Image 1 (cartoon, rainbow, N blue to C red):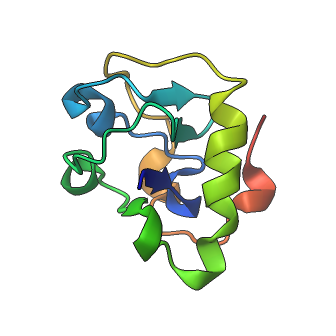
Image 2 (cartoon, rainbow, N blue to C red):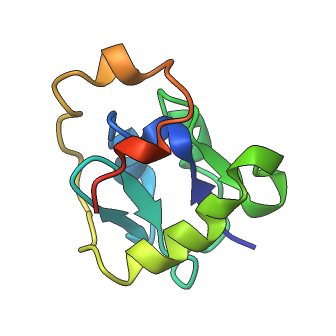
Length: 107
């Protein structure tokens, strides 16, 4: 099993989760993070660190967010590893509570 970053991360890109990941499985795009399912060791330390509550165990991803399982795997192949905390996007706090942000995803 792996952990999955879902819709709530889009346009926020908080990186608190990256700081605690023991295996550097996070990959960064312009306005979203993903977890590489091949690198994730299922430790779960990232989940409570996410201010947007965007990270779920694969088995617990909400029904309307299940497409993010494949999306994390796909984008992890394209985006670079992020192994250190960065500042969130400038308007992250404004977008934190917004849902259904997939149309805003930048690849």
